[in-house]
Image (cartoon, rainbow, N blue to C red; front, side, top):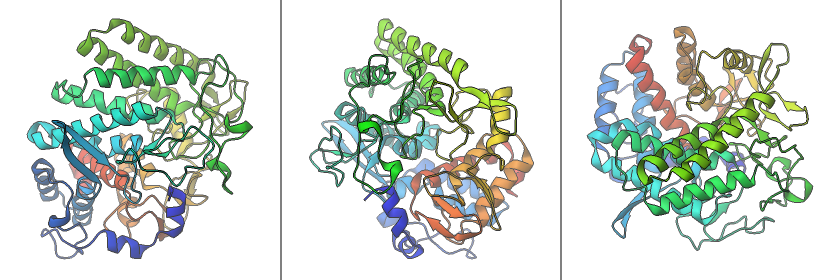
Length: 471
């Protein structure tokens, strides 16, 4: 089953089965929807303590209830942790699909990094995610999702690509390699622990570097191709599996977006920005941990090359506005001006450490993306916010609202995001993938751990910086 198929079959009834009652004793007004303690996949004392502390300081009891449900959802429901040959190994599913996306698994545990110093077992769990991701990248750097069992055969085995056992799906997305780099760097900075970053990790980083170089496509298409027999055009690639043409200008080609939809133009701007900062992060690690100055210089050289190409090709006139960043370009002069609520997107660039929040080009891009001038910004009777093509027209993504809040410095905008997320959870106590702009009860994916955990991250940020907004 892929994400689109699950969306078509998802229902609120499924949510009630997946999220069986247990409870928060803080307020009997709200139903108990968190997974029972006896069925939780992993327990972290530090996470439980921060939930109690934040809930006690929140005047808004409904938001407090939602935080207690959402923030631990990754640990409660999606992780499989064990020790293998003396090393931690953590398999993380996205929620409703038994497969581990490199993107989702990184984003799902990212908000727990600051708590590791108080919880060595939590630190071990996240080290296990890094170890598992290294194995995945070495299995296939072009794949986006993997199984725990390296021999398991995917239902997508008939895709016309170099499919391997243990791979769930083989859609090439730049961010699939960037997210493990970001997680590794964040873990290293938070702990100074180098145990996950031995020679095997270095090998995975160098393979990622090689893959990025291949997908600059300076010398032909490179080894990656992909086609699927499907009625959904965004699930396959044109041109015998190599995608729509683009000019090799130094940017990295991404044949699919973070939504797992095919790109229109393969020079995907947010993901190229993400690659710049990710390559510089692993360069710092290669130098600091392995004293590998040569490989570090190669990572920095590619980051500089991509950054230079972004300055030349990413900035375009935005429809009905001034200059800003395109979502995709082809290097020949064509651009796709839109934004998509999956991360990385254009609005999320400061969140990922890619650009400064006050950068004028980012500001103009953000203002445009969060307005009706963006074809995937929707406003209806239930809410307004950023969506994307993956769920179709008129579907707003909580991830988009969360990122809007995380990148805002304006109280009124942050309050709008909080209020909207509170109203559109429609009594479930959890985030969803998307919901209809006119009726939030029409939603997709009742079990979507990435959005749940990032909602918790948003609440924590507001609690630490603007607690008055939670009263």
